[in-house]
Image 1 (tube, rainbow, N blue to C red):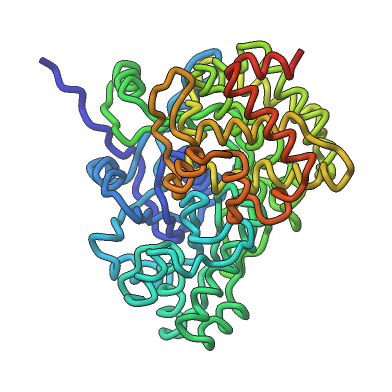
Image 2 (cartoon, helix red, strand yellow):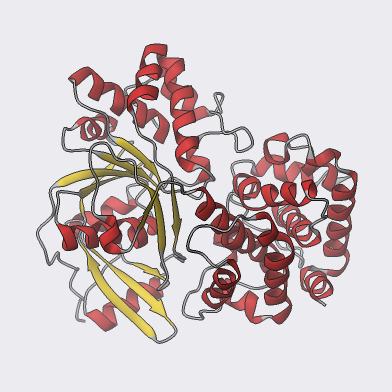
Length: 474
């Protein structure tokens, strides 16, 4: 039997300049390629030291390949594979936290980027402040030189740089959080203030936390994807990723210690990210989450399968034009109806199998940013957003952990136990709305909104998601 050879690097590993926390599929499909292309276009020492905060899986896949891997662009016309060489090393934080702090404190590290998901910031999504009782934060405050959380590592790395007389690195969050730069700055300052007020003051005065907006659909890599790459390219690559052709990166241009020439790779360097971010969070992420919960309950495994079902495509259209776009100021250079039309085209790409279950993860952390802000803006304008109420009810049904056939759902969420308890309550809608960390105090007191969510929940319970979506879209 012939063994497919392992992928080998086709360029020299670059000199270091960036440390990245969270080397998952999105990082490898988005940030690392942008850095790779920026260095090819304009040079610079911006090699990435990637740090896994939990599992050695990424290290074990990338290390035998000297950090190189294949990114496969998957479009309706077929696949295009390209080797990415911007990762120079991978560290596993639980194995050696001191090595991670040392890499952060190295003079050549000028930027620290993050893709740790919403829950990785150990914050309250409603307030944007540090969740001081989070187990990882409690551990890190007790063991500041052996942290577990991204926040603990950032502060430990900055503290060591200050002690060494080095300028601080720039912190660039690349997660789907509104005002992600402001959020990570706040939780870092909240944490540092508990360590030492003088340290927090110095971080506040000297560290840049630019915001950015990221967009590229990146489905989870499957064994079939790895086998297909081996057949087409003749190499085995367990670190490979697949992604859609589209990508967009809008970055606040605030990098005191320099940065790669990301604009040479197509990134938009701007002074204000917020309008672009709001557009993406509400138009893309809001409808993605809606499709995830209602689509999963209706038996659709992927987004492309969901929007191939005409009522689900109509649901997206109605959400965009009646409930979402009226809440969004037009970002510079954007056409919002055209942006939404392009989103539906992206969703329909049958080559991208973006699983509804994958998008549905961590809903308690995502809902406030993706959907509830839009709800509040509609209510403030005197509109009751019936489609978003259906989306919220869909999340409640999904988060209860039992699908419409009575089969258990693998609900991945930091509040999973609370969600199950709410679903089992005598009045589940009231129990969910009482979760202040998700809904705040205001929404549970809005009588018309509560009635609309309750009506949608009753429709889902009595008739199922497919029928409820069909009735809404008719």
